[in-house]
Image 1: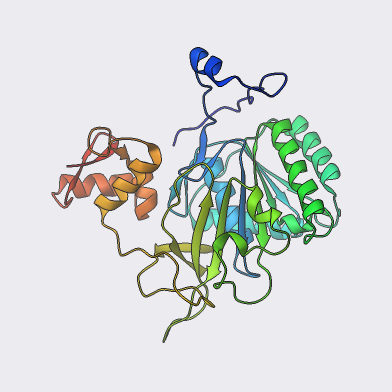
Image 2: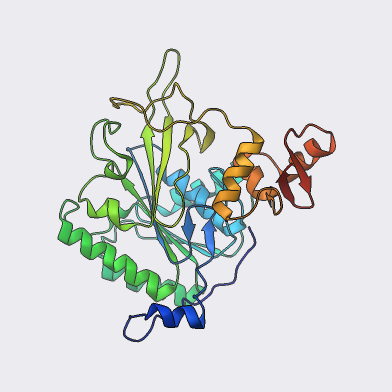
Length: 341
């Protein structure tokens, strides 16, 4: 995905009301650019929820780097943009070494558009954090994505109170409107195995958490079969703006999560039944899925090689070479796009 300059969000009508037929006549407004392919638009909110010690901070660090460089994150291409990573939990040296470790592991070099703000020990409430971010943005420039890790460190009241959490997420709305940025944050699961609940209900605390964000990703522990060690998670998405993708398998191998197929014999720990599953998908099936997300014709338009490469964890050059050598079955490459034949 291409990079974007920071863009101001257009204000709605003064009274916040549209007469739809008038909007139709004058033309529908442009939607905000996509930051994470098939998952999130700029100015929207995203939550990642997972059990303790599932590597959430490493996952978010990799996302910050992917957004900063226009790279891949969990099989999704990201739009290059300016990022503010708000570190609420780690000491400054630990956080900076963690970013350096992940960047080295995935072999990317962040640029000046990645800003890290350290708030450990500050005990910020939402108003104090907004003020600190406003000061940071004034000094270092506008950003397109604000990543807060973890949200529970924000002193927003009782996480089980619908009123307190309602006020907190409203403050996040205000922060997004103030900066024009997407707000992304990590949250934790309640205690115990969560597989018996719907994905949207696995985060701890008030139900407001699970119904506010535009995109919710959950990492749920996978059952460890015979001879299988831990560190395996099912990533499921609940989305407001895009079609729900198939679940994928994430395997935690310090310092990153590796993406794999969630197969028919996989199940989440604690589930009475099984979550939605996929069989191993062909390149052709991946092209179809990406085309649906992008709203394009997989034959006539094709899908960007960068997006397909992210999904398959390989480079566009590898895909081009496969097509050139005649190893592409049911698909081909034309320019920078892969097409169904």
